[in-house]
Each structure stands twice: as C-alpha cells, then as structure tokens.
Amino acid sequence: MSEATPRTMKILIRVLFIVPLLIFAGTLGYLYFGLDPQRDPRAVPSALLDKPAPDFELPAVPGLQTPGLSRGDLEGGGPVLLNVFASWCVPCRAEHPLLSELVESRGVTLYGIDYKDKAEDAVAWLEELGNPYAAIGHDDSGRAGIEWGITGVPETFVIDGDGTIRYRHAGPLTRQLIEEELLPVLEQLR
Image (cartoon, rainbow, N blue to C red; front, side, top):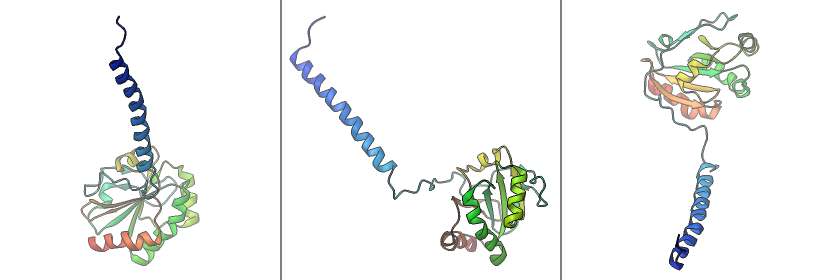
C-alpha cells in the first residue's frame, strides 16, 4: 500500500477537525431548541383534534354507583367534557374542585375515564372529594387511554354534540385556563 500524499493528509486532518465540530454544533442546536424554557412540553398537538372520538366501551368503576362510559355517551347532546384522571395523580386532586365547580355553576356535562387505577382507590377518592362525573369508565389496562392518545393524567377533552374532539388540554386545569380557553370553546360549540 502506498504512503498517503501530503494533500490526502491535509484533507484527512480537515475532515477529522470538521466532523467533531459539526457534531458539537448539532448537539448545541438540539439543546437550545429542545430545552428552551419558553416551550411547553405538554403542548403536544393531538392527532385526534377535529376527528371523531375513538370508539370505546369501558365498564363502571367497581363499587361506584356511577355508570360506565362509551363513545355513545359523548354524542347527541351539547358539548361535553371528558376528563382522564386517577386517584394516584396529585394534579388531578388539584383540578378536581374546578371540575366540580364547572358542573355545579356552569351546567357542564362531565364524563371521566379512571386511568390505570385501583377501583377501591378511585371509589375512596371520589367519596372524599365528591363525584361530579355523569359517567366514569374504568380503564384498568390503559387501553382506552392509548386510543385517546393521552400522554399522562390529567387530560381534558371537549367533545361536540356529534362526538368530534374539538379541544384537548394535557395537564391540570387552572382557573385561568378554564376562563381563557375552555369556556370559550364550550360557548362556541353551544
């Protein structure tokens, strides 16, 4: 094998210098855009927006008098809220009084999916905090959550009278978010 020429050596040195520099620049770009504090990691767009709600049928939570939930429950009336929650979820506890207030003072119809929760824990949680849900489906396996594309709990959806998903919020609801986003969507759909 012949020895490398001076020209080949210069090219090789440049490549060995440029490749790590490009990798470093790419990593910096990823960190800058990927870890930008201005970006909300929960702001993942839902592929289900403006599409029919998934077809599902969930049994009632064992030990609870509230009926189970299916896609058919979400259709045929005005707009409804669907809230995915769990008793083990701390943010769910924080938003629960706001959901109850929406039902009591605004007349909002609220449905729930109890996600990957022990039935006895869900029953105790709802007995302690109150049960504002018209129906609750028990999603013990998490399969319905996958169908809905949830990224965690809590998540809240607005479904119009035709069963079409019009709004999604990942994370706990706040009073400000309810006033500025959720209620305007509901009013527009009425």
